[in-house]
Amino acid sequence: MLFTDGLDEWPHAILDQEMKHKDGDVIRMFGFSMGYGTGQLPLLHWMACRTFARYSVIDSIMDVKPQSRAFLDHLSVALGRSLEGTPIEARRISWTNLYMEAQGLGPTITISLPIVTKPDGIWAGQRVAGIAGIDIALAELTERLPKGEQLYGIIVDNNGIIVHHPKLVLPTTEVHAVRRSACYDASQVRFRAGAGLRVKLNYRFIDVIVVVAVVVWYSYCLEPVGSIDADSIARTLIAQLVQYGFSDQRVYRLVGLIDSIPTIDLLELEGNSTAVHRLRHGIITSTCGDEAILDGEREFYCANLKGSPYSVVIVNSVKRETLAYTEKVTTLDTANNPFVTYYLSSRSVCDWKLDPLPAASRFDALQGVACEEDRSLPYALTNALKKWAESWPQYVSNN
Image (cartoon, rainbow, N blue to C red; front, side, top):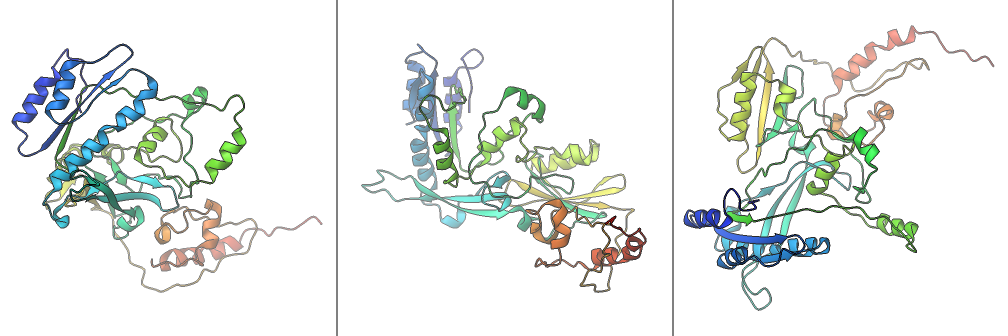
């Protein structure tokens, strides 16, 4: 995207440069004249026509959505032509950022592939008919990663942003019946706002270059007024199961809502050392090697996941040791004392199956859930505390 008012670089100069070095890329130039009274700009119109794109004049707030959506049809035609003759197995897969899936899957990444139609009388040219996508829960991606104190795994995107880390606190997995409103009282936003959002396109899906001359986003909130029945509107919304995606996550992050995924850099959780900077550079540039990156008592091993914007990092603490508990313990033997309670802090146990439960209820549900993990060690540690738990005084009722 090119945002310019023509003072530093004229848009047509950028377009000429891209057309000269496009190397087979399909280029479309979409021009937008923004603001009341702007009118037609011949140069933008000429550039749009030169690249078989679209030019629009947006002189009111009501025109923002319909005019900004108009370029999607043109892009789908360009995308279809780019993929014409490319076998499905050779097409590049698109990976989304991590987001909270609305129907209870929890932290999720979606991979998708365009469905391209053949030119006929209905489609009037090669274009994209739809998208085929698969949702992958984060729990599936992290199932094979080590999770110990000595050895643990991290997933990082190609912006250096953490996707999975033992210290990364993710929202609780739950079912969202409706998309939550982004309209909030300013006084509440001031107290709840989080850190600023850092956004960068982290994957180039297909070789289509889009140059936008000027883009202005308007966001505003409307409240029911007059004779509009607010209760009726609320019942209608609750009846609809609306999923939200990354664009909504950006709004949630800006207002600091608890159901948004934190945007945290690798440097914030692993330290601002030279070794971590070197690791981060290898992730961003997809140049991770086989050699370990040494950082004091830690070793970093990095691998870029081919065909995706993600990398896996294994952290090994050299001076720490991992002990294996070989005895099989299949049951819990706890004390029945009202002064003693048991609490399970980990949310990822048993592939996150206990995450939807309240924190105080997870321990009681642990034995009843199907789990492939070996629970012998935590069971043995819990059973070893029974004698200590029984040493507490018994509760005696005054009645």
